[in-house]
Length: 280
Image (cartoon, rainbow, N blue to C red; front, top):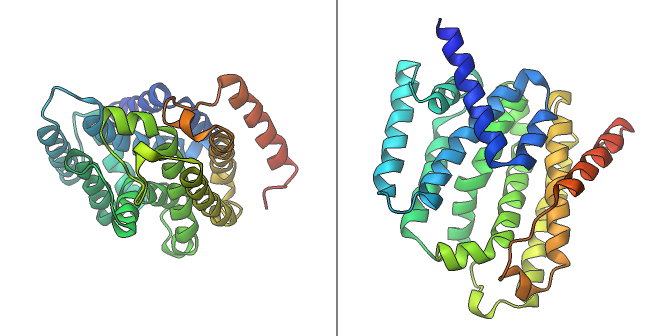
């Protein structure tokens, strides 16, 4: 009854996605049913690693993330794990040819959160974003193109820019928590103690360019993936607009959100736009 266990494993990854991120869960639901489980499994893996370094205060995070990594490779080599998140993820890795360098880059960025507080150069900033976000987009892209190398290479650049845009929006949205609770500053050359409108505008301009390039890749995605990715794109663009319209001093003192009511409206808007074939 291994299949039953595998089914339960993927359902656990889906449950993690739904409980940790309503917006991402909504976007995944807009994907073709044939690829949803694989994306849930990717989210489950990256979410658990992220929770270890961000949330499990009072525990030895270094031991936990090291054990998580070891258990993943054990699962990969055995083809099974009693950890349902790792069990589902290792199957997705194999089915869609997700390369190990992506997983190593992701785990490297997660481990940096345990020892590094400031990113003082563009190189450090880009390396962290690549590992924490770009490779997650690339993992998803592997699923979207059914593991085909040629289609993957054709869309790789835009997928990375979309991952970067999402992560930078998260950085800006979470400025308060990252700074006050986790003592982190990801933006090079930005002193959060003197964060001002000019600094905010520069960051937003950078993100807008990422979105511009990323959109060119979204329109080229297979039909199974296009609407779901476009839904996530629209949500994050809305969040960026809210941040753009929020005074800089409020960003550092509160967490900007998009209400569930607004999310529903964005979904309806995205659906109409997509059905009218305007996403092209």
